[in-house]
Image (cartoon, rainbow, N blue to C red; front, side, top):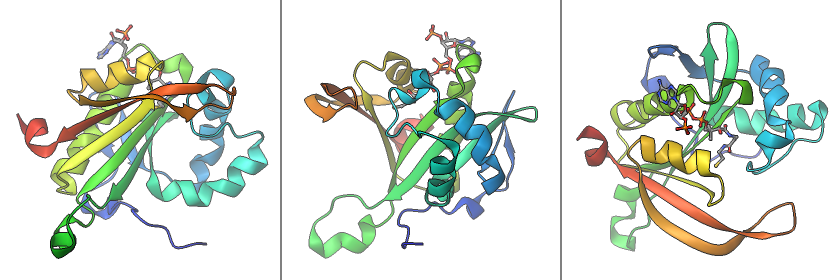
Amino acid sequence: MDELTGVPHWDRASWPRTTERLTLRPAVDADAEAMFAYRSLPEVARWMTWQPPDLESWLAAFDKRRPYTATVLLGDELIGDLYLKTENAWSQTEVRDQAKDVSAEIGWCLAPEHEGRGYATEAVRDLLSFVFDGLGLRRVHAECFAVNEPSWRLMERLGMRREAHTVKDALHRDGRWYDGLTYALLAEEWRT
Ligand SMILES: CC(C)(COP(=O)(O)OP(=O)(O)OC[C@H]1O[C@@H](n2cnc3c(N)ncnc32)[C@H](O)[C@@H]1OP(=O)(O)O)[C@@H](O)C(=O)NCCC(=O)NCCS
């Protein structure tokens, strides 16, 4: 396997973590098929980076994805997944060491039959708690297509700040260029 960068230190918390209704834990290889079931649906893949064409391709790519993935369970059912990758902040050369692995990109995907009940909000809120209180990071950010309203509404429910609206900078597999949104949250904003 190529060397993976930005793999979170999942071991800085006890897993599984439980929220009011959900259980979260780092993904394991056995989660791959359940994730494929919803991620291969056109209505889900529409705004995701990749639409896996078949289970075989998904399984082949899974060992690179798994280290950045946490799964969301409702009872025993895997209903969604979360993405977390730590990153270096931009910095000037002299202070580069202090900017290493201090922030993260996060993402989410929920099986469509479980939308509309606040599960994504509940799961991502717990992920943020792990990021800020478990890993001690100082900032998270996430990006989405501007037309993906459920995704940016989720970020606003979580108190994330809209930081950028980019214009027609992202090429979709439908051949069109779309606007993008970036949201972010600082640890001190999370704590207040
Ligand atoms: C983005 C995505 C996770 C949002 O899902 P969602 O169901 O809208 O988000 P939640 O699970 O937090 O549910 C919130 C909705 O449930 C409602 N709700 C019901 N009970 C709730 C509760 N207890 N707490 C919060 N919201 C609740 C909210 O009002 C909201 O509905 P609204 O948008 O009509 O106001 C989902 O659409 C998805 O996975 N899409 C496909 C993949 C994708 O686009 N990923 C992001 C790529 S950038």
